[in-house]
Amino acid sequence: MKNSWLSLFLPEDEYKEKRILYFLGESAILGLCVSLLFLIVSYIYPLRLIEMNMFFSFVVVGQVIYIFLRYIFSGMEYTDTFSSKDYKREMKKIFFQSLTFTLVFFVLYVLISGLPQEQPEWRGVIGLPILSGFLMFLINFISLKSSYRKNNG
Image (cartoon, rainbow, N blue to C red; front, side):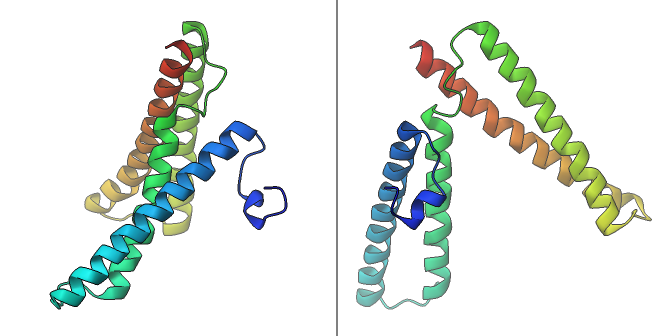
């Protein structure tokens, strides 16, 4: 795999590299099957409910989401989390990383968009960084929980 341009985007760890390649392959096959099914159905029933380019955009986004979710739930991100002490240490690290991300995002967002003048605008300026930080925490928490279960089960 070292002779491919794809190796630029893959991790150095052989196990992770192999698993991600499986996820990419699964995603490609699922995307191909869904696309072929859509083409067959649209040929038989030529309904114009959705444009072709919009559908294939959804397929690509679906493939990216599939790979991302498979990676999160695979439990291979935190390979060195075996004890409850390790788990708690990683939880603290995840919490503070998410909190730091939220604060940096908020500051940069205010610097770029400016200070809001009215109260409804503040909800967006505060809400978007909080939501982003929460999603970051949730994704890392799920990955950590999966890794911990995998390493101890």
